[in-house]
Amino acid sequence: MGLPHQKARHPLITLPLLLFQLLGMFILPFLVGLVGALFLEVSEVAETAPALLLITLCVLAPVLLAQLVGLVLKSRREFRWWRERGGLTVRRALDVLATHAGVVTLRGWSLLVLGCLMTLVALGLQWASFGLIAVFGLLLFYLVTGWSLFVSTFLVRTFERGLGRADATINRRMEPAVVHVGDEVEEVWTFRRVPVPAGYRLLIEDPNHPRLQTESRYMVGQQARRGELTLRGRLRVTPRGYYEVGPARLWYQDLLGITQVSVASVATAALKVLPRIKQAHVIEPPRVQSSEPDVLTKPHRFPTEDLFRFREFGVGDDTRRIHWRLSLKHGRLQVRVPETREITTQDVLLVLDSFVPAELKQAAERGAEPVLDALVDAWLSLAVELVQRGDRVTLLAAVRAHESAEVEVVRMACRKGEVAKWQDLGARVAWQSSHEVNDLLADCGEHVHGLVATARVLGAPPGRLDGADTTWIVVDPLAALGADEKHWLAQITGGTVLGVIAWLTRLPNSAGSEDNAWFRRVTATWRLFAGWRARKALRARIARTGQALPAALGGRGDAVYQVEAGPRTLTFRGLFAQRGGVREAA
Image (tube, rainbow, N blue to C red; front, side, top):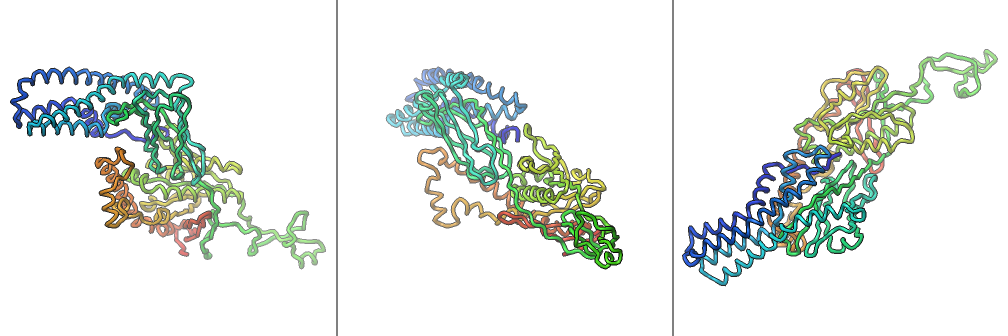
């Protein structure tokens, strides 16, 4: 996640927003005048129409010019920031322009539309005093908007020039920056001598990564310009992953909430959440005479059924291997030595299978992250168990690069005392569509054992893999996803009649918040519904294909183990023993 996780909005969204913000407040008064002239009786004001039109142009033209000039100056620094990181595209440029063009807030647009409607009503009813109120409302809107547009350029330049001083900064960080899953993390903002003009306040907003389930929202007043101000917010959850949040959106807003002036922001922070290592318990599958030991089968230290040869007892030999009858016959102590060598150190390639088809990658990232977390836990816990046995283990996974969104294949030799490096690699694992498990196991040769941790939510991998042998560690995707989530309607209303009434009548946020607007509430509800529907469809597909995976893998003759997760332990229960192409059911 090298670049910030926030994706630029689609041009079909940003282009209309840009045109609406630039032209809407200038076209709307003329549109109201045209409607009034066509459908209402305006003979009493017809004589003053040329003068009114001239005054309107004299007021609106400078405001439009100021907005265009301010838009260029405000967007310039953010363009440069994205260009330095290779992320400046046409889509990103339109998104930046639409953000900085949005000077009028939802409250400001409400005031403008209400003033125009009141003007039409006053003309229709020929009610002079009511029309006077409407004109005052429009005058207030254009006065505040014009002033904000006029000073916006100076606000932005003061903001940028002020933050260029050594004693003026905005710093954003996570404390601590590296944690384990479930640990508490605070987001810390430090404002030092930040310019906040009188009559304005500085607002900060960042939705952050969806998995963190925490939005960043802060407001800074005049106290930020007098010294150092620190604001803190605790993250609700800390799931496994590497998160680079930001840049946050910063803007000045007048005290009436009519206008907002966006400023370029480079406030970013990084958070790395490492997976926890759990204790691994291996339960071997039942074997028959034709079965062979797999890579997870624990070697017996003292074999009892084997062909033996004999030699004279030496220093350090196990006294339990002394053959007493033969020793009496020869007059010297004789020990039994097995003709076959015991299983000792093995070369193990421990692979994590994170492949999903490209058309389902977005759905997997939205709804199947708990499955990937369970895979990483099993992958790392097995690595610790095998290293403790004395095996030579190599981790192999396709992970997301630190400096970009590209996927790279990483091999890491497991050495004792370097568990933190393994966890760092596990934190970077993500769903990917570039490398199938067959490609990752291509290095498995005659003396290398392939061990694959997989969930294969869409069915078994194509074809049997070449190599000495392959052992599969299967994570049940439905068990990893947990219980079904509530219906989307029940999530916002509680599933009761009283809940529906409360949702329709009560404000979800504090009084005065723009998030109480119906437009924002409907948008948030649609976002909730879309996510719930995507996760439900993914769960239904997993239920159809994921449950048959162990039997499909066992039918190839490979050893198969099922992962059973506990609070602090993972049990690897053997289902099928390795049997040269013919499965042996447990």
